Each structure stands twice: as C-alpha cells, then as structure tokens.
Image (cartoon, rainbow, N blue to C red):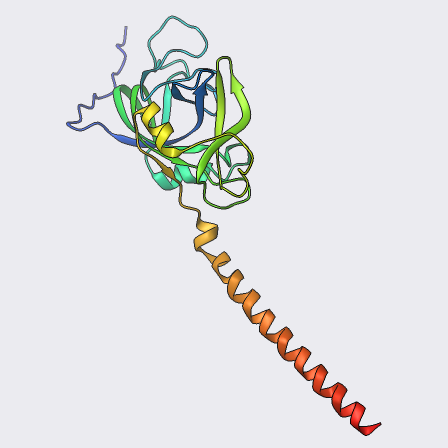
Length: 218
C-alpha cells in the first residue's frame, strides 16, 4: 500500500497575521462584546481569543482537511477591504487577527483552529461618512444584538455605544475605518459647490445690470 504524502509542517516563530470581516455583537445585558462571522459561522459568536469548532457539529478538530470548518482570514489587508464592497458586508467591521494553533494555508490566506483579535476597525455609516459610534444594526442572534457604525448625524435619537466602551468590553482597540470616498474624489464636492455658487452670483449680477440697461433704454 502506498503511504499518504504528508504536507510539510510550518513552525513560525511569530504567529501569522491575517485580516477578516465580521459582525460586531453586544450581549443583551450590555456587559459583553463579541464577534460573529459573515458566512459559515454567523450564528456562532466568538470572543477576542477563541477556538474554532466545527460549524456542522461534527466531532473533529478544526480545521479538518475534509471539512470547511474553522476560522478564515486573508493575508492581505487590501483583500479583506475588498470584501467590504460586497453588498451584504458593506457595514461589517474589519478585524486584524493573530493566527494561532494549527492552520491550513491557501492562496490568499488561512483556515485555522485558534485566533486572537488584535484590532477592530468599524465600517462606515450607512450615509457613507466615517463612523463615530456604534448603533443597533437591527440584527442579532439569541442573546446578542448586532451593532454597526454610525455618524452622529444619522445616530441622532438612537441608542449608541462609543468606540471606547466597546473596546473596554472586548479588550481590544476599536477605531473608525478610513473611508476612501470622503478622502478621495468626493473632496471635490465642496469646491464644486463653491464654484457653482460664485457663477450663480455672477449670473445674478449680469441679469441685474442687463435689467438696468433695458430699463434706461425704455
């Protein structure tokens, strides 16, 4: 019988780093922050440090070679941010994680057994502006409410939670994710508005002068 070929083992001195998108959760009593996946594990919340369990209830350790269970992350931050363009992930948070325990490497990331969340970036408000606090997302699972980022304008009159409060509950730094639309071409909007206002003022002045000329001729 021909023996199975074993994949070479990696023994890194420093834990690999990855990036992933996730939902932010708050317990019903408001004293515990957690996270949830956006695909297979969306119904299984996890803490800052967590160990993966098979999402299908099978009795094997994750990640198993013949199952797709386990935590997932991408190696490149840009790839994870790319996922945040997908409609259902537009308001997800971006997590930076340390890949711990056993893992299976694939082309763009890892599937692995344990992780430690080291940083959280909150997604933009629904209006497109950078988030300034967390508000109820209108979603959740048993015992936990979903949270999303909101700006102070859109969050007016709604119950909110500061980044600092969530960071203390979770035990990890929390900040607003940079919004490329605000920093990029949309910065031209105030400038264009100012130019249009100036042109309108000049047009009004020309019309006023034209009216005076026509009035003097009569």
